[in-house]
Image (cartoon, rainbow, N blue to C red; front, top):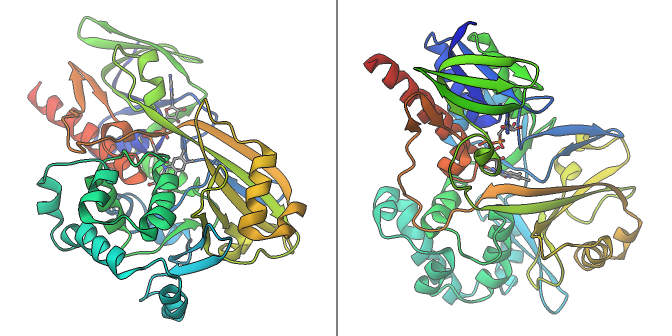
Length: 417
Ligand SMILES: Cc1cc2nc3c(=O)[nH]c(=O)nc-3n(C[C@H](O)[C@H](O)[C@H](O)COP(=O)(O)OP(=O)(O)OC[C@H]3O[C@@H](n4cnc5c(N)ncnc54)[C@H](O)[C@@H]3O)c2cc1C
């Protein structure tokens, strides 16, 4: 039986990025993926002419790891407006926009009543230090985002109606218990670029990465669920569907947090769930801006008319809207709940929207409580390495960085052998 240099288990962003790095440095790499295609949590389907990602994703093109991994221009990213539309408890709708990117929204932003002087001062105290000197802010003791906002005096409507609902959707965390340092770094990462999506869906990102991995010689095999990993003398034996047994000098386990303990003996990192409802409309929705329910009257944390920015996401003359809810075993949103809230957020016309698909993603993101900086070495045993967003941060950036770190750890150990 041939012994491979490296077997990477999982072809999500982390495993693919790791394979690129290793193959580019001359290692013979086999990637085994359980699913029928690459991408893991980043997956796009065409359904009746609509482009549906599995859950609502956003690509921040300013992420350094994304820029270092793929040719962004080829992804044809379309940027969403850097603004939010917020439903208030009295039923009114207000809009807050980035003053430099959308100066036309400035009067609405000032009139919104959401940016009170007290909250703006709090925002400056919370965000200013990390915007100016990220290194210093990162080395400071960490706390939860809720504690961070309290300490900054950010306690008014800007927090309750905008920041808290917005980040609850981004982090799948309504309890404000994520690392404050991470959330501030995340907010900072959006300063240089607007967030958007590849024209043909988020799945284009892992596809581009897989092309790059293949171009440098990585062998990516799909439909190859690994069922067992065992140390045999000084090799790893990998059992996989459709492969039987493979031997490898090094193995990188790049599966999601929830699948870790099926292969190795270690505690499963906590994860958080999301649920996205996809609707088709015949009439254009009222706005192209991300809509939040500041009053939190229902399960939806955000909703967006994707086709208002990316017309190709819907067939000609039709429109695509997503509505995302947090998903927890004890909190299951019903279609009636979702439609009632959509009517409050988008108006009664939403009653005619056709439900295209509902995505339930129980392990959408690993939880990241404080402290953000904790030891998470890639190498966990002789010849055994971990990659995945659960090793870094719950994001595209985190997954890609973890892949590079695992690869460098493999390369370093090979040199020492
Ligand atoms: C709905 C949703 C929205 C998101 N939105 C954003 C966003 O806007 N911005 C952002 O930065 N991040 C976002 N993320 C997070 C981002 O998508 C993830 O952090 C990233 O894709 C994780 O990549 P990964 O390689 O670590 O894990 P995964 O993508 O989970 O890849 C792991 C792979 O391992 C495979 N695997 C598992 N077990 C086995 C086995 N036994 N044998 C072989 N293969 C196996 C899986 O099939 C999978 O392909 C979102 C995630 C979700 C789910």
